Amino acid sequence: YTVIKLFQKSSVYSTSTTFIFRMGPVISLCASAMALMFLPIAGYRPVLSFHGDIIFILYLLGLGRFFTIAAAMDTASPFEGMGAAREAYFSIICEATIFMILILFFKLTGKLSLAAYFSGSGTLDLWETAGSPLLFVVIAFFIVLLAENARVPVDDPATHLELTMIHEVMVLDHSGPDFGFIEIGVFCKLFFYSAIVSRLIAPFNPSHPVLNGGVFIASILLIYVAVGITESVIARYKMDKVPKFILTSFVLAFFTTIITLEFLK
Image 1 (cartoon, rainbow, N blue to C red):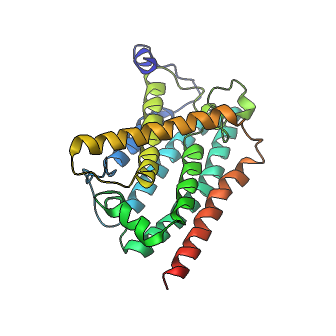
Image 2 (cartoon, rainbow, N blue to C red):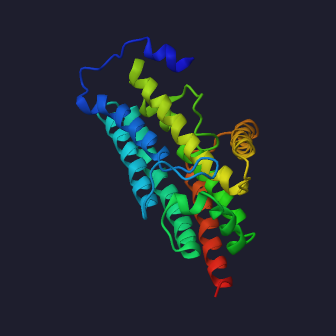
């Protein structure tokens, strides 16, 4: 409903902005939507897939983030520049966590593809090979989900204090359809990370399509409920504690990789 209202309005542009400000929301949305093309839904093979596509996906999401940050810097606003700096800093730690998890998955499967990890029996094979330490990967990915999607305790999308914002302060000057593109892109990114986490916690692949889809939808809803509960019981951390919280995901992924590979020798 909110997105529909945004598309019924017109965008307002500051005189200090250039074409980069207008490109930011569109490229960010296209990058998030393109990433979904490589995502296995309910264990089925994705629309697009090739060896090494996971690296392409990470750079694709990074491209969307780059143009979002560039659009924020283009406004010549100190508030949006502050949020852009925080977004760039925190995303570096998230990327380190994701690459550490990819190292583990590559060592377990010998493949660099989302389809190899999360379609068919691929996820179940990961659990059978890695065992219980893979639980720490689930926790690490959930922390990355909170950070990448600006959720509590990393960020508070409902706050009205610019000094405490991260993602929301970057898009303060966007309005109308441009802000609608940003909202859709945020939803696509949240669904992307939630689908990965849900596949890790529910690696089963029932033969019946309806049952398979039901398991996938239920696990996605479980992730959304977990995000809601997290936002309800935990307050947003102080800005100096946010990097430590995100760094916890890297530590979990690192030790999971070391322990798993050591046991596989």
